[in-house]
Length: 392
Ligand SMILES: O=C(O)c1ccccc1NCC(=O)[C@H](O)[C@H](O)COP(=O)(O)O
Image (tube, rainbow, N blue to C red; front, side, top):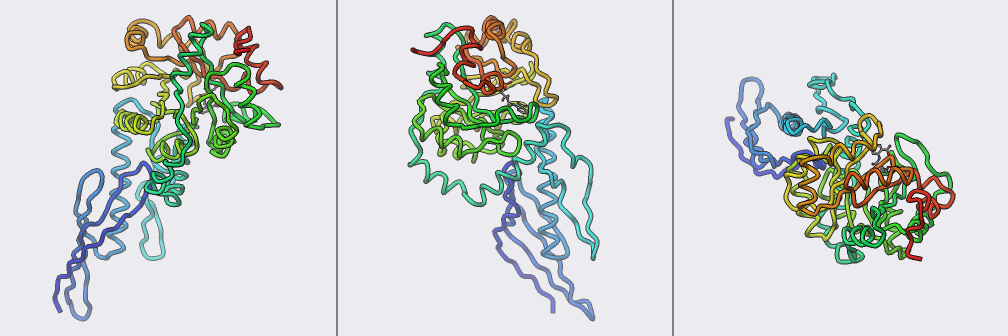
């Protein structure tokens, strides 16, 4: 028996969030008789979000395996593109290259690079797995339906501008933060709604709510609870966003703004996510840490809000002079010309710190530790600014 069978099999090999997606669009199974056995060979045409290719193998299983390897290779290529933009954080999932089986033995193609190089990379790799699982449970199509029932979006940037005009001090984004990788547990008796309400009474313009569970002991439930409790300050969903799906999810849970970290996201992802944010009505706080990231972000159209993180997310080093350094000279001039709101983030504890970053050119600050640790977070705000900034 000699024959050729052609099948059309749409097949999605994996649905990992940031990974390229591939489909086998057609397969050819070649059956030939070589006495005393039949032999099979399979050719598959693969279309992916990154292009198309033909994979040949001796069985259907090995086509699937070859496809997984191809996807992994494309992922490696994406990492190279990111690296060419100065991004050191690799987006590879923690599993590394797919397993191969030869008889009873299993082995990996390559074993290099399966360990994260720093905390940010570790967070991102775990987030990749977490988001993939969430997406399986709630695909984008069902999230889009839920958008109709999402609470109305509030003007995050408008609230910061208004607070700055009212107080002549940087508008405060007060962070609801229970723990962090660098500082451990920040507050034992952590009631997110109580803290959020105290921040609002204390004069915060906006709130930042950490939603990452594993590293910050946060949750989307906290975000929802705060929103449903009637807190009027617009809410930033403080997440490690690696996939546009998370923007929809944040919006449904009541966010008015999201964080996009330039150390993690290549330019194309930032541009694409900014567009989606605009469609959803979300403000995007694009976070940079060094000159290179800042220049990349300034090269992207439509950016209204940029945060300078004084904490190096790879080493945890905090230095508020970073805000001053980045806003000096040409970059500061561009920001002023474009009327971009700059946010000074992390490591702000005293009125002197606030004055220092204001002098450097920020119109807003993002503060967690110094206020969340106080018994009365409202008083924490007054101490931070050296005066009562509430409306009362
Ligand atoms: O806070 C950390 O330890 C941390 C570690 C790794 C990634 C991000 C991290 N923090 C996020 C932030 O940038 C801060 O929560 C935010 O700027 C407030 O900082 P702070 O006032 O120093 O708590």
